[in-house]
Image (cartoon, rainbow, N blue to C red; front, side):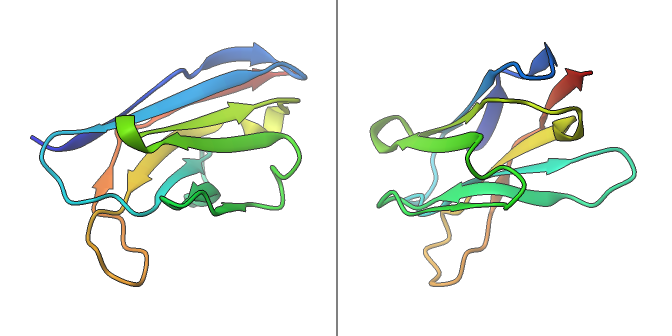
Length: 120
């Protein structure tokens, strides 16, 4: 069964770092865009960063300069290196993958999420 699975969340003090990983596995089409999104309690899910198969990246303004998204196409894996973490980065982080082949990004796979908690 095709799926994406996140790992690497946890509890860290403000100013610390975490690295999230997400592996897409199973039978699915060629993955074009992979992305990280997050949802804090009481808030809507928001974009953190995305990366295309060619390495083109997009970041939310709130994480620019602190977070880095990268990807290993051979392993269908995407990473999110998070540095200089702030309490406001606390959220459930979700991985998404687009294997639809459509010109417009349309995620057909979402992970279950991994909790990131940053203490002050």
